[in-house]
Length: 107
Image (cartoon, rainbow, N blue to C red; front, side, top):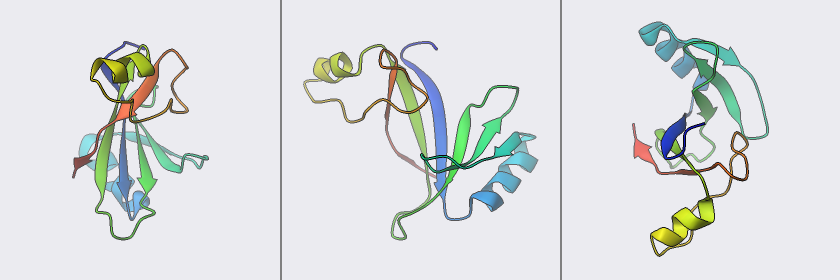
């Protein structure tokens, strides 16, 4: 996985099934329904590899949003280079040497 590149995007929304149907039909995405500890309800697979997820929104007062993840070579060093602590921890898809951090973007 390339470093300093977007590595995953996740939509958090109240009705993941409706979102999967909408985005699947709009963009001809193949979606795989699954459940895992991270809460992903669907994986988006435009080709054979998943590139995004659609998860259920668990906080009623939070609006739906897209969350992009960026791969970094060293999470602690990346946080230190900004003068702040790294805001996240390695995600399930990332190894210890290729962790991901996230920033929120409103949909």
